[in-house]
Every structure is written in C-alpha cells, then in structure tokens.
Amino acid sequence: MAVEDLEALETLQKDVPVSGDSALPRYVDEKIVRELHENGERITPFGAYYRREKGCKVLKAAVDGGFVCPNKDGRISKEGCLFCPKMGRTIITPNVDPRKKIEEQARQQMEVFRERYGAEKFLVYFYPATNTYAPPDVLEEMYNRALEMEDVVGLSIGTRPDCLPDEVLDLLEGYVKEGYDVWLEIGVQSYHHRTLRKCHRGHGLAEVIDAIVRAKERKIRIVNHIIFGLPGETRDEMLETVRVLSVLGVEAVKLYPLVVLERTDLQRLYESGRYKPLRYREYIRLLADALERMAPTVLIQRLSKDRAPDEERIEPKWDLYRMKVTTDVIRELARRESRQGARYKVGLTAEELTPLVKGATGAPT
Ligand code: SF4
Image 1 (tube, rainbow, N blue to C red):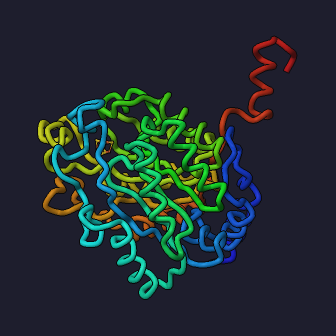
Image 2: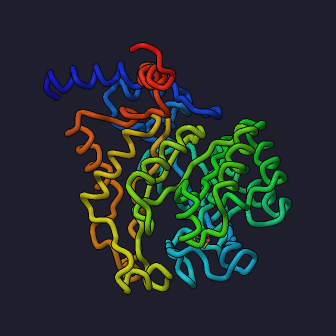
C-alpha cells in the first residue's frame, strides 16, 4: 500500500464513527470492529469479527428441518414471492437433505469444516423456507437437538418477519440466557413498502420493524437478507434500505443481486421485457455505494448469492461467486479510497442545519 493510501485511510478512519448511531441496541463488540478497521479492512467481515469474538473459527452447518412457507402453502398465498420458484427447492446439496436427521446433516458438514478450514465451533443454520413456521414445542424439540451437539455455540435461523410470534421469540430468548448465540436471519429484501407489495411478499414494513424490535428486546441478533435490483426499485431506494437497517441496529447483512430463476413470476416479467437484471459493474458500484452508507458496525455475511443452479438460472449470466464479488467490491472501495461507513449519516448535522434554520427564521446571516 502506498504512503498516500495509508494517509488517506488514516484520515478516513478518524472520520468514520465506529460507534453505531442506531436507534436500537446493536449486540456487536465495537472494539473488535474498530480493531478490524485499524488493520485496514475496508468492510467489516462477519467471519473475521466472529473469530475474534469467539476466539476460534466458527462456521455455519446448514440443515433442512423440512419447514415450509406460509406464502406458498396457502396460509398467506399459494403464489410465493415474485422470485421464488413455484415448486421444489432452489438449493439442494448432498449434506442438506430433510430426509436425514438434522444431527446427521450438521455432523457431516462439521467434519469437513474442521478438517478443511480449521473450524472449532459451529452455528447450526436452519435455512430453507421459514424455520420458525411451526408450533413452539415442535421448534423447541428441533432446536434443542441442534444445540445439544458438541461444539455448537448457537443457532442461525432463516425466517420471515411475520412468523415470529412472542412465544417463539421467548423460546429463543431462553437460549440466549443460557449463553448461546441466536441469530435470526430475516428475509426483508427491501425497506420499501411499494417494493414488498410488488414482490408479493405477503407482509409489509410494519412486520419487519415489529419483529426486529421484539427480537432485540430479547438480545437476539439480527441478520437482514436484502436483494438489490428488485423490479421498479431505484438506486436511491436501495441505498436508503441500508441506511434504515443501520439505524435499526441490525447486526449483520447478506446482500444479494436479484436472480431470475425458472418457474418464477419474475421469469415472465423478464421474458416480456418488463424486467432488466443488473449488470456486473452496476452491481459492484451499487454495493460500494451501499457499503459506504452502511454503519461500520454492520457485519457483512455475504455480498452475493451461492451459485444458483445453472439449469435454473436465467439471468444474470455473470459469475455470482461470492469471493469474486467481494474481491471486486473491495477493489472498488480501494479505488475510491473509501470503506464501509465512510458516508454513513442519518439526517443533517448541526452545521448543515444551522444555515437552514437561520434562513427560515429570518435571522440575520
Ligand atoms: S418467503 Fe422465502 S420461501 Fe416463502 S415464497 Fe418468499 S422466497 Fe419463497
């Protein structure tokens, strides 16, 4: 790194508020975030952060508990979200198979992760469909089995914001009190009501905010899944989404580009010429813009999708591989001499506000 780059980074570091200006508490150790930034990280990677917090490498072992989704089983709708395939599951791996016991699914991955990546501890990640969509006693039985496995430090649970009744959150709070980490991975996609409606999510913004507030009251950590490139959504709206989740004190994010898959309503929109997917450079620039406007304390779990199955993917055709996307966005931030949080700001500062007030009150300037 050139001397002038170092100087620019140092200046930037002084300017970036590491203590998150969020309305709700964020359960992240800000000291670790500061250290990561002092070491020159341009983003705040979840893996590096969590390794320091736990003192060893922690990876997620994904399991399929056989859950379904109320936006597909008729409880809310039978159509599903605009981008969700009508039948079947989109991602199937040999180790994540609902016909196997969850312990068996997790154990196979843990063995590989120990050997290949030196992982010592694990989160059991319940991920396909809505993993809180069952009676609390059924959930408790399943979560308990996961937590009883050796070296498991907690759960990561993928769900919808409208499937988190108090009874379920109370159950999760019990695990937090026992010393486990509980991460709720909430599919939000956008903080814009119009977009949620357009995507047939079957819930609005109120459910998202309500779920986050009630989970935070119980010290449950929140991951938001956000999609860029949703139909009709503008760049400013996408950037506003990351500011809103920052203010809400969301602990981590997974950002994805919208992918057009076979057997979706989005496919029809795309084929009729009414939807244009993001181009690669466009996505990288958008990510860099978004990261600059995101609080530095929001941990980055992903900046792209797992490779979608090629036979089901229609667009985009570019390489979705997350390591490539992450490398390219870090390069883009370096080119700008910028980093996550460099432009994080909500509202006007006192200096920005004063001239306006003077003008409005007619006070002499
Ligand atoms: S909430 Fe998830 S599983 Fe349910 S329809 Fe939407 S994308 Fe599919």
